Image (cartoon, rainbow, N blue to C red; front, side):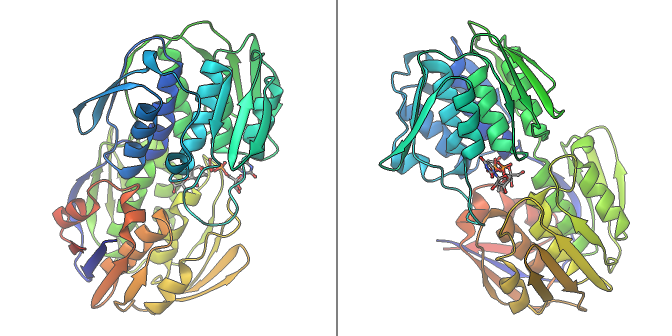
Length: 417
Ligand code: EPZ
């Protein structure tokens, strides 16, 4: 299973290079199915989620050639199946994107309900609402979602909830539908803009990505292109918080500062200094951060995927902080593990009340999901003594070379099996 052993207390200093965005890459890879030619995708993070997405493409019949660990050439022309094997799709939330991509290509898709991190129910009713609006008949039988249409016709879809996955999936299904599709109340995350840019470079006609109204004029053909994945703003934010946890001074390289604005603003609010450059940000942290209030919101608000990390940091702030989780129903499961390390956090429904303590103590803890795992690593970096984080496979789903990157910054962290 793999564990990280962390001896806390080292200040993090130096420069860390951010990898491509996981949540963009896992959307771009299925989108290749819509192309009539070979696509070359660069800056893919070398993590298990992207490896899984490539495996699914291969299982469908795509020809895949790795140019290097971050660059892949995919020829989708021999894809001959619209069914994703259950044992593959259950391993990752983003496997649901193969529904939209296969429906968009074949007017038929069969994918088991997605797996992924477990922090509350992860419904796909809004995805299905979009597919039905485009003319698909969607059924769920023997654990597989089956979406089928004579043909797909553009439609107006008003999302009842801001949903990254539904926005992406409807975009994938609509891009070759006949006529105009309008997604209203759409999610605005950077990875949605990245997918729209990728599809437009293939010949799609998508407007408004990054706003809450996305218009898609269906086209007949999409062509093979080369494209580079945007940097991962959540990985970047995670290293910023790790620097703040240790009172360090770290340059986060290969980022788009605008994608980090809400994270940088919050860190400045609680006492850090963040300098922005063209493709990097530099964070200089105080010895102790101030307490604060955090409300997770869809982009451009403070990202829910940074909620566990900022909670770990606020556990040693000067004063009492409040973190309101407004996106997911049950994303504080990791708090029990932080409290084993001496934090004083109470969870009341969707609010965590965090009474800052002087320092955390190393302890054996278990990660319950990707970002919770990252939060426990951050806690270990700042704690006195040794912390052992178990279930690191969750963390390695989304953080490329996290041990090497932290070691380069001065952390004392090892991976043991
Ligand atoms: C994506 O998940 C991300 N995953 C998540 O990141 C992230 O937390 C989330 O967006 C929000 O930003 C990927 O991109 C692979 P949603 P997704 O649909 O698409 C409800 C990580 O750590 N909802 O935006 O599944 C849902 O229950 C992962 O990288 C419905 O009710 O999230 C949630 O409360 C964890 N019906 C809210 O909307 C639906 O049909 C937002 O979900 C869909 C969603």
